[in-house]
Length: 201
Length: 215
Image (cartoon, rainbow over all chains, first blue to last red; front, side, top):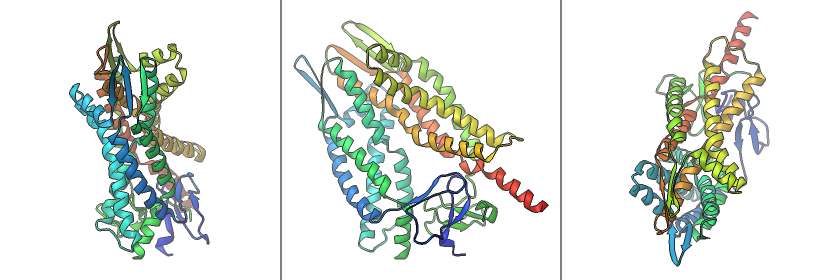
């Protein structure tokens, strides 16, 4: 039996063969129902385009305030970096690091790893440290909490709305956009496509 | 073919999912070079350690204040639960529900689910039907995907503290519970990550093997 056609379910380890032709778009484990793979035509092309969009949105999201508060003519802005430094100055360094890690560092690492893997592949080359870069991507994907942060920002916005004049900043919109782009990447990007293209080179 | 990969000495790579033969404990994936294991080493022990630590820290996370607010009208210390109640009484019931879900339901549900998963793979003599196993597998999949949402309150406190601290009328500070709660979130994520869901199905293999041997 050709080993390339063997699949072991990542969740229950049932060995299955991927022999149906043409290959289905989505395959579920016969025993526990976990997703074995989910492919798309042009999945990698689309992911690369979305990665570029994500980088632009990420930059805007971090450069502009997320919420602004206006109280008696006094205006305060909260950017994400500002929030980290507030926690730092309030003697909550670890919590600050946790926020910086999950909302800034990991999303950036995810975008960088995708670009590292996909740009050279687009031009028929395999990026150096391909395996390590993919392992990094997997790690960053699990720990990047952009979606949770967007909901957190919305909750803060509504809470502040009772107190004073609040405005949603460009940072919040960019973060919401980034959340959508990252979700679209998740549903378009199948690592199986990536590894097959890379090993064909 | 109705067998786990491990029974045939094969394992799927965690990184690139290529199925390859595993001959020793330090086998490497031939395609991507990651370490390949038949099962995650020490999965049950690591998972217990992270889970117990998370359960202990969950106590200060709920009893200590999460957010310290002071204004001209006085000061108040809010725990996670009193924060939810405040939102509820304030008429923002939808926000109260979101925060209740993310900060209370998700962490408690996650810790209980991990407890059930660990006990059901570890206790000897536990007989599970295939349906129950499938339900356990689904439980693992759910806690793995919703666990991240418990970070919500940490972000809320961080943003509120930043935007309110500079105004003269009021100030908001992150309380000590933020640290404990952040640790609970990280520890439960690590616990979920270290658990190996394939352990749920391994007894099925043993039974099948015994049946084959008897036939």
